[in-house]
Length: 112
Image 1 (cartoon, rainbow, N blue to C red):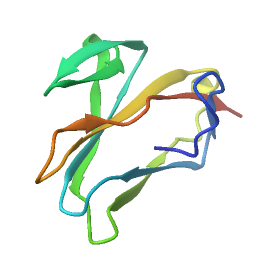
Image 2: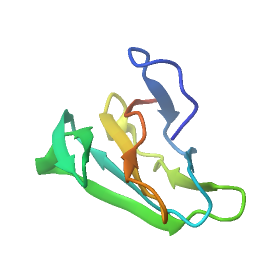
Image 3: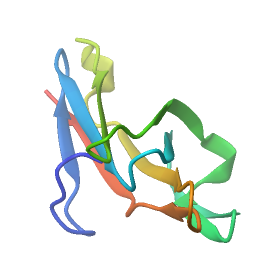
Image 4: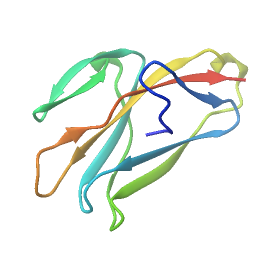
């Protein structure tokens, strides 16, 4: 997930740049990162996504490498109409030897 600032402080992204996501877990795990237009509660595989289930969008999925991490960038278009947009993100990690778990949710505000 983007750098954490605590649950009540949003991440920020600027138009025309990229927002970097990093998900950690046991090596060999499958990780999927989703975004949503709001928060909510979606029970899933014995854990939960704290996102609005009606607006979930998959950003990507990958197998965590030997370092137990997956990193990717989400480009934010240079479009002034995106300024002020808020979205929530969270990852689901399915470990090869343990129970699935979800990461802490993040809230992002797009700024200029």
